[in-house]
Image (cartoon, rainbow, N blue to C red; front, side):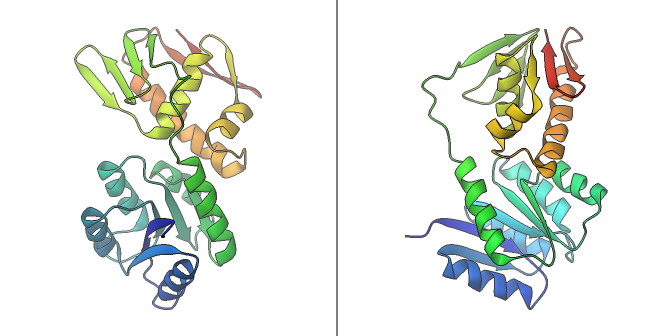
Length: 228
């Protein structure tokens, strides 16, 4: 039985088939697209457990493709493969919705380990002990449906946005330690995940700014505090 279905978008005619064959040998059902437009077309036609996207592709680049995929499914895990390793490029990758980022050349064995780790983290948690709703200022936050509601306006949150906001709510007016949040949501407090969390904090601030009584503070050297 196949472990997962992967969309692989890679325009390198040598690397693409090599990766597809390797992932297939590892028991992943892998669909290869040679450009961004074909990848988007394939994504719209099927259901995928995870996407692996090259950044520099013809027709639609990987960052743009990730944003298009996020419109269709805000939760599907995305790994970027790229020759770019500048900090600005890595941050742009996370802003586009990346869960992980690997620079070329890379170990295919390490790629498989990262796929397995991401898929484990994306498994839905049991909701039994989970508080279903939080009242924060003028907002109601539904943790089960991942909805942030203010009056007649509703924002559908991604899984990571929802998990991060839930942690902030459960520690409201207290310090949410940065490393605790990273390990709780990403299972690893490495540099790339830390930058990714910064991006999600920025998004949450944007959502909550409609209520001026709410604020997410940076607590230097410690973490964040949701004031409400």
